[in-house]
Amino acid sequence: MKKLILSSIIAGALAFGANAQEFDKFSLEVGGGFNKPMAPLTPGFLSPSLNLGHIDIGARYMFNEKFGLKLDYGFGSMKEAGADDAVTGSFDTKYYRLNLQAVANLGRIMSFESFTRSLGLLGHFGAGIGNVKPQENLYGGETDDVYNFIVGLSPQLKLGKGVALFGDISTIINGRQTVTWDGASAIGPNDPGFFGANSNWWTGTIGVQFYLGKNEEHADWFIAADKYATKEELATQINGIKDMLKDSDGDGVPDYLDKEPNTPAGARVNSSGMTMDSDGDGTPDHMDKCPFLPGPASTNGCPVEEVDEQIDFFRKAINDGYVNVYYAFDSSKPLGYSTSAASYVSNFLKKNPGVSVEIKGYADELGPEDYNMKLSERRAKAVYDILVATGVDASRLSYKGYGEDTSVDKSSADARQMARRASFEVK
Image (cartoon, rainbow, N blue to C red; front, side):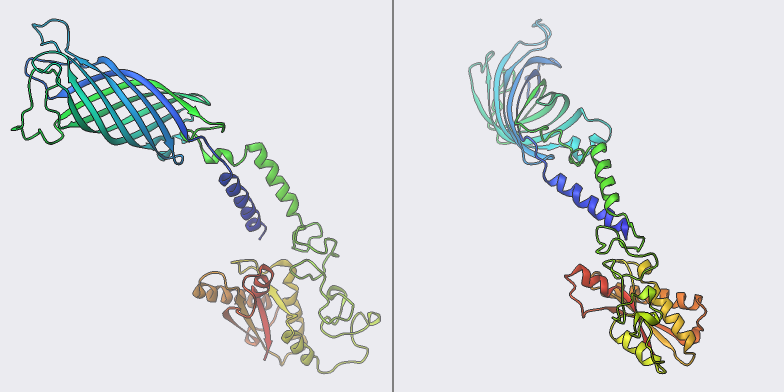
């Protein structure tokens, strides 16, 4: 029971800590690097593998640690491979693009934090508009207004709280482009690709991301687990909880629930740790030689006159709910403070050999009904085994699980505790 309480308190504290955290969501980024037109190119015109001439500027907003949106603007120029016209025709083409893109923090999705806290990876894809304008050759000065689709990956290196270095490689597909990248040929109306996505190019950049906000981390690097508590803070909290769960008087009820923290050793207590006086005669059960028969303290709680029909008092004690063995949630192991009830039943059976007893198990209303039925039977069987172990003939005992006790208020924790029990019925 203590382990269950401890784990519940820690889980609640950590969940609250996680929900209370915040992180920055906005960032700006700027980068520059290379481009390469893949197609269409006029035969005889070649592009370099890495043409230096691309700049990219963007703004990003993250909805959470994993997903966001960004708006970015890229522009530059493309040229031929080498300066020797015998190798390739020369060209110079200007372009720009404007794209709205979805962003996924792949580093967080793939749990990079399990092996690094300074490397990240973003994925992005989206669509937008653009412009392609060759400066040379037959169609120099012509302008193509195009639409485009873009997809790319951006590795990240965290440099500090507000800044990160990033790289990016993206592929872009243009639609409705009417002139080749070199400006020497037209993609005419008879070309099937004229009305479709008929142009492909790449960019590769390196740049810097600037994080905006006052929180300790941006969404790119926020790790909720780190915000629960430091090791030292968690150790302090756990030690405090352990102190709270101490059972100073050894009655089986932790101090924070114990309404009577100085119970005498061996006293029979209820779920609140208070000493029980089953017959209400002022003598506590652990000192009362007749715990179910009221009597003065001078006779150790027993009646002055001998009572012949003790079985009637025993039945009354059962009907009044005094003799019960209690259990923790989802457990069939009797709680220590309540096992004395089984001892009372054992002593009575030994003094009254003509009496038999049925042990009746119950559960609270939490959980599936069929599971609770089996749990209640296990609880009854556990008490049956205790009585047999004390020397009571098994032929005088029977046990049965009665499932959920619906007579108590299931919204009350104290009431549910009273429902988790094994009772007795004299036959």
